[in-house]
Length: 222
Length: 222
Image (cartoon, rainbow over all chains, first blue to last red; front, side, top):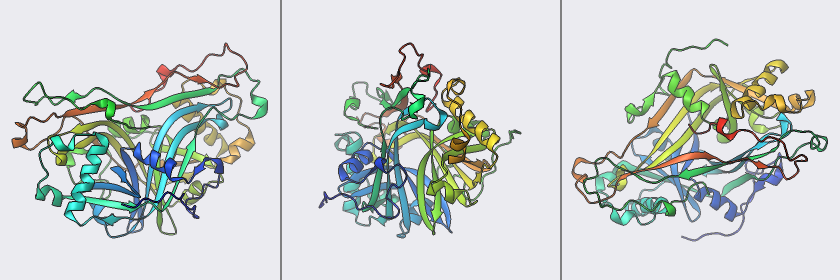
């Protein structure tokens, strides 16, 4: 899959107007935020009314993918080439300032606009799903019971070409009004991270010498 | 503020149709999911095209609140009584099944539909912002430099009456096909949580005996 390295060109929808220093348009930043995510929020309309559905997502090259049941209303609607807005958000900290007004959140987010495409080709669909499992738990796909044609048919995979995209990032300590720095008020950041814990075996596991996945290879949030 | 205790009545938009056992309509479940969140994703339309904006949120009684700059496009658009869909999502674990098809995510989410209202009254707006700060870091509001009238004017607060709302929850181990349980494939759950870490002082703190907030009182994700 060809991968462009040029930065995204800001549009009326993606240019960060307020606090423009938070806007990022380079692919490295956008891809890192998307690749740290397990879930995105897909916005779309049905009869002119907005819906926001959380769903698992993954990136491959210049596309973002998501999937679900072929019977789902969300995917059936999105597969007709309607406009979507896909947003990914990571929360990195509470920013506690000396005034309520300057309290903030450290975060990394991406908004991507476009028309989603339905993946029709069965081999491509299977490869995309494999990419998803391998991205989350490297090495797992080869250990699994093979996907059946019925399962593949029951699963829809959509993709969005990453073209009209921007990131927004806030990092660092609070930015207080100059005269407030002298006040005896604690200020700083309370860091927030996504924690991945040791695997909990299915109580129905029949053999007890099975090797659980290596959680150190699972990267979420960063 | 009066608080209804009756469950939400599912509508065409909020009834969970696929895997209906995941749908929850009681206020206790919905409120617990909202109260564990720092951020929601607000979906709305501009010129018929969907936008999904992540923003800090908090609940008070039967309303969900969010805020932002009075100059923001998002809030200006939402304040005109247009339909919104507000979604809150917590990720609790990777569900690793014996087949790719039954892989899943343990999660708790809420979708709320309605028309957002703009809070015009200055005292009510200030009380709402106080409620937000106190919910995240209990006891902090009283330690801060007071909000100025200019700051209050520059801040918009919106609220959504929680009326057309449902939650969706997946918990527990994988649900595999009966014949797959005998396969020698590791299955189980990799738990994921939101971790709140020790506060990092602002490098510009002028006194070093200031007391940082008690992070044990900060509850996020659960």
